[in-house]
Length: 53
Image (tube, rainbow, N blue to C red; front, side, top):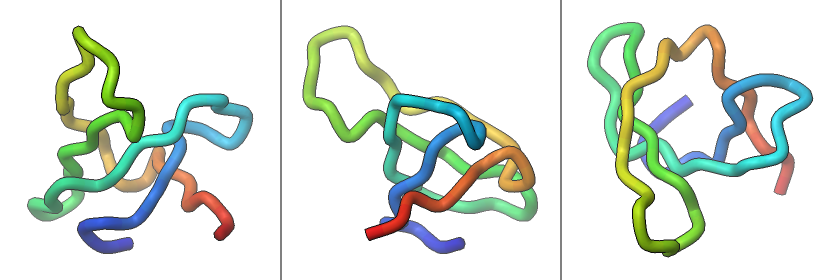
């Protein structure tokens, strides 16, 4: 995985996020929706699932 990839936080997740940055085994992700109240947060890379294009 790399910055810019679209991911979900688990296989059955409905929400899609973009990887902002990666530091070791930790990723900073943010929602693809531009809704008020959304903010980037950290998640372990091992938990993320790539979204098929």
